[in-house]
Amino acid sequence: MTTPRIAFDLKPSAQPLSDAERDALLREPGFGRHFTDHMVTVKWTEGRGWHDAQLQPYAPLQIDPANMTLHYAQTIFEGLKAYRQRDGSVATFRPDANARRFQNSARRLGMPTLPEETFVEACDLLVRQDRKWVPSEPEQSLYLRPFMFASEVGLGVKPANEYLFMVIASPAGAYFPRGVKPVSVWLSEEYVRAAPGGMGEAKTGGNYAGSLVAQAEAAEQGCDQVVWLDALERRWIEEMGGMNLCFVRGSGPGATILTPELTGTLLPGITRDSLLAIAQDLGYGVEETRISTDGWREGNADGTLTEVFACGTAAVITPVGQVKSARAEWTVGDGQPGSVTTQLRETLLALQTGEAPDPHGWMHPVS
Ligand SMILES: *Cc1c(COP(=O)(O)O)cnc(C)c1O
Image (cartoon, rainbow, N blue to C red):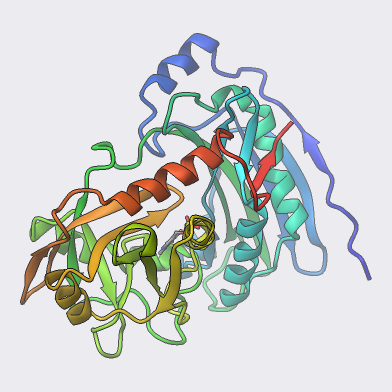
């Protein structure tokens, strides 16, 4: 049986922000601080499925105090960006990949799956309606935040029988305002982000809630970000905060990009996947493998591991410059952004802004 396409009702705002007010916000957007004039909502109810799809003015929600999400955190999200292209048009990056990951997250949390085409159409509708909010300065973009949460009211613990899917959008400047300056990282040996069989592969708020105390510990240690290790041995590198990690072995054209393999406890990043493909396009070797904290320290000391960077939609690529744990401390290479890191970053950004060809067909034009 094929499910009928979900049709959206368009209810544009009668009072969008004026051009002058919007332009003032776009001058220094920050990250996730300002939101566009509209949002998308789609409901799901047991027995009825997806219905009541709307593009409507951005507005607060009214939530019952016994809303299940507030208590049991049955909620998932995505993050993707719309980029102003060199020719003035707007395109999103791999929204189909986000749609599929959203379905996987939904399955892990016992939630209904949203059809891929509805996810992409919801993003398209919002970007099209609020296209004036897509900034055009370098490193700027419109960040889209699709999410879904249980909307049933009640305190019984069970998968909810009612959900709300939404998309909101926020203009974004550079995620780390210091630019591509390398970050320092704290290897968290006490707290873990995810254990085998847990929710590490799902993009869900609970993973972030559990990470905040470790991030605070990293800050106390004078570090910018936390690096997660595996739950069983506290030995294998998993990810950095909300970004995947890549290591460069060797240098020049013979370099190889190493990244922790997807064991189920780390988030399968779309930036990670894209960079592995781009690295191969550029002639580098690529290996998904296991990297230990000792292996990192030793490889750094003997010069075999030359560069390390984190990658994710929000910050694209951020070099790692300093590493600290309870027992050791080292500088990655010379502490400056490496040449492979810089080349990968510029190649991906050029593709996303239409300045370079798109051999993989990743850009999705929003006409
Ligand atoms: C979203 C996320 C990433 C990066 O995924 P992208 O698709 O590249 O943005 C990495 N780790 C975690 C924990 C995340 O939530």
